[in-house]
Length: 454
Image 1: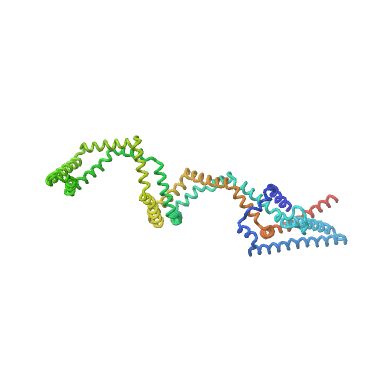
Image 2 (image 1 turned 135 degrees about the vertical axis):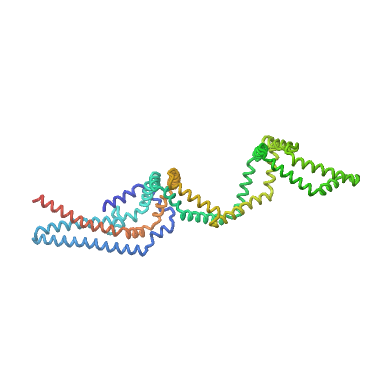
């Protein structure tokens, strides 16, 4: 029992200076209440401690009575057995009293006397908390220990085998969908829209778009990709001219001077319409029409100017700024979030949606790879180990201070009572063992002494 007392004293010796200020830090009220409140289970344990105290004390009184009777018998001329019984009983009393002192010194001062190094738990509570925090930090929160334990667990293979089962993939998919819906519901649309609009505007304003547009246009012209657009435009123009011939001729006549005769205006209008229709028809039917070639050269030159001409690039940037600054464009950017949000929420709620089906399939595929591919398992284990090591090394002080501050916030008297209720019964067995072992040791010593004396 003296060894236990010494171990406790060695624990508090490491950080006396730091421990002096430990009680000043804040401790959660729930942690303090947990140590000061006595539950019915604690009361039952305390009754068990009292019963064991009575048993150990009764055994001490028993050996004391045996000692008195043995001494009386020895002086009354009884046989040699009286000396053996007295020696055993005397040593049993010494062992019982020594262990009673050691056990009592843990929780209070024996007989109320101010003996040094007694009442260790109530007086050294804060130092014990500091020592316990340091012990946990050095032996449980070290980088090597964390890596070794996580590597032994094999998280990658276990997680892969778990995810590979369809019911587990369904569960994870449902949980992810619930979390996604919750996150989207909590977010305020106005805030997100403002952030999205500001981000898009800032990103578009910071990057020059003319060179990129020029390169894209250059490639389109080189590949002939614009010709289909030209074919469509020319074909639609031809059809429109055929249907709206009267509108074209009226427009030409309406622009003629007022002093010209009407029949001349009509002839001019018909002539312009026929030439315009002929031009569009030829351009539609002739892939090698000069106008098509001129359009190709114009687009090629424009693509080159977008990439190299300073004035053209500047004008494109000004146009971009004007477009982005318009309220209609900002409203369009902001409204995109509402559409995306509604689409995601609907997909997350529908168990048969493409989103949830793809997530489920991805989880099953990931689980199958993790359970069979050693390379993937190694990567997952490495990520988990790295994350755990980062948390441990970065927040070790905060974790250990939680232990220290919590212990410092406990009331000394109630803490002593609660600890005694939990371990006091076992400590009373130490008193009983001390009585029995002391008696046996005394008997053995007395026997050896008699044999050597004989």
